[in-house]
Image (cartoon, rainbow, N blue to C red):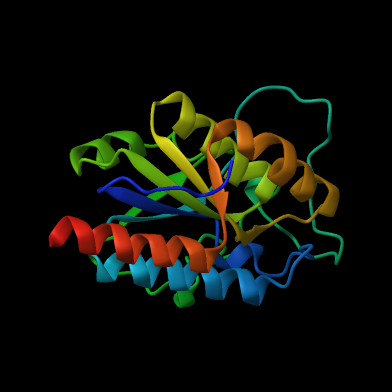
Length: 204
């Protein structure tokens, strides 16, 4: 579904743009993803809209058929979510996100940002009815957060050029087949333009 509108109180949710994941071999240049997520954050803050920054510090309990990974393909340890200790600073939000005191900051221990945090209640308290989601990984934390947001009754928008995955085919499948069933998709610039138009109208 093409991007059509944003609710008056829409929040940005940025998933897992943290120090421990910056060395992964993503399908798209991570610098570009970071820059677009930061641009979204700046646009939302300019209009007084909530920004939620999410990091990951664990993994869901339970058995899975896929063995835990102890390092990325470059041989670097990637920490507790995939088996093994977390290096110092692994969960630190990257400075490019320009964290502000007004931002919501939550640490998740599941793929999605809602299941193991109080993110939903924090958004509800601010009157949020719609979320825009960006970050990594497209078919992991981003998709899981989008599913949980949709099931919680939020309108969902995906900033498809502000996310990536280590698996190109997984990124493409989420963007082409999953996200249209959960909400609307759009580019970073299209979302920023809509944020500015929508909020300006509401403030007029």
